Length: 314
Image 1 (tube, rainbow, N blue to C red):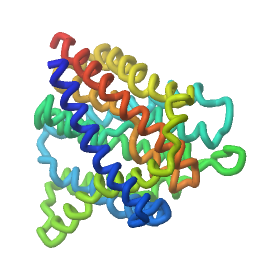
Image 2: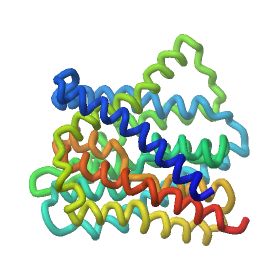
Image 3: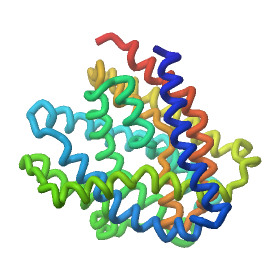
Image 4: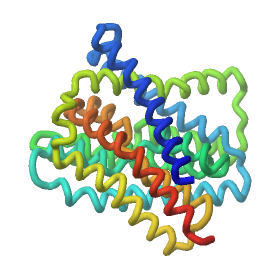
């Protein structure tokens, strides 16, 4: 099982990097440049992200059991992001505040969608996918609140909460729209459901292509020489999953739910670290370097953490 998990993780990373490579080649050949990618960031932020979240609510069956599992998973996901923030924030107080914002974000937010969901499907089945999907809700809520707070710092790294921007954003608004659809058992007509599905399906390929354009302008020679990138990897891939494993066991969580939650906690830094960096004028090259390094290292760490969760007695 351990070797099988490594193979599955490696395959998902390979698929990810094939898409990223297409974006990088497109940038080098001037077909889809970094400048064009930045122009597409708002489309990904305000339209496609919204559709992804709403569709996830529409695809869930509203049963008492599913609702309980949903609430537990969302709550555990919020706890995970809160814990990650508490671990990471003190680690990036010294030095350049703009660069620290990128490191901080990459330490807190993981690739719960692309990496976690396919791996959950292969290792844990539909039940695991359902739990991981619920964690994505907590990811979006956290990313568009605390994530915006981290990345939207002004001069000298000064930050302030703008409640309108925090509430009126695609992540939170999608949850506000999606929850009633879920609880009221609303079935969207095909004329609305089909466009929603088409737009949501653009999420992974477009995000990877954009990521590839930034990666094409990244200095690989210095990627693993930066101590703070290695610190991000240590926090995101090892420290956070181990802390969450202990907390979840303490709370009595076991079985597939535990494995799914640890799988989500051990996912590498989110690709939207680069997208948020572009959106808030941070160093996209540094963000691409960080995400790339952590993603490569996760090939070994993710299966290890999943295997640890699976060994916990029911």
